[in-house]
Image 1 (cartoon, helix red, strand yellow):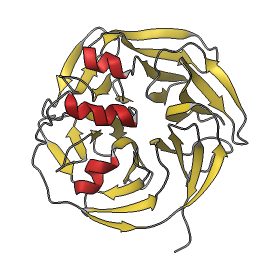
Image 2 (tube, one colour):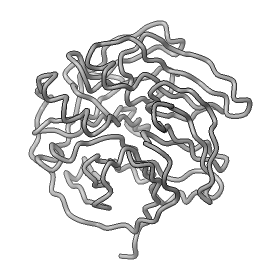
Image 3 (cartoon, one colour):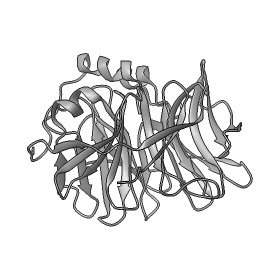
Length: 302
């Protein structure tokens, strides 16, 4: 979810941590889905979510101005929350959208505590700040107890932080997981799935929330190392779908130790989600990219 240039520059700023229990690289095949464009020219897009009522929400930056932006299935859009400083991840729950701010390269480099988690009521538009003084909160998930996990992938201290539901307490989560970028919550296993930048032996870490010392890893080898893994989601089939800044969208089955490439050449891909709500196909995967394009990926026959 951080910009590609920032991800590359990270190599000069922090040492690559050794991921827990390295595994052999998974077998990678191709299983192409059909890609169509929903909207384009939207600035630079970092993340997306669905409100379940027919609207896609995207975090975008146009010039130096950040926003939460609403998009309808016909590709028409409007600003929902203006003047958002470096918007990052979006999570929709209980009639509200939670989003991070301060997802800024320089904030990561200098350790600036200018990041927040904010909440916007989807009905009224009322804004509430949940947590403050965060450093470059990039990926984010909201857990069943209302607490949050955020990631940081740039700077001297990277990884995962768990934040209480009221935003008053924060603790490191699974400190051996470093350079964490995109996050997804796997409800079936009560686990947080994190993508990791610049790890030659692991691309994903799957952290058991009940026992954070229990961590599984998925190794995409050099494909993952140079593909620059970004945001991800757990699909209705229980598999992991990963957007890569290098242009690939990948489906990963950690149990079968396998992965397949759904799409290639979609450079700057930052986030993926399955459709939800009126007008959005629940069987299709929607993606955002750094160049302002929203795409729909649909499974092909066979």
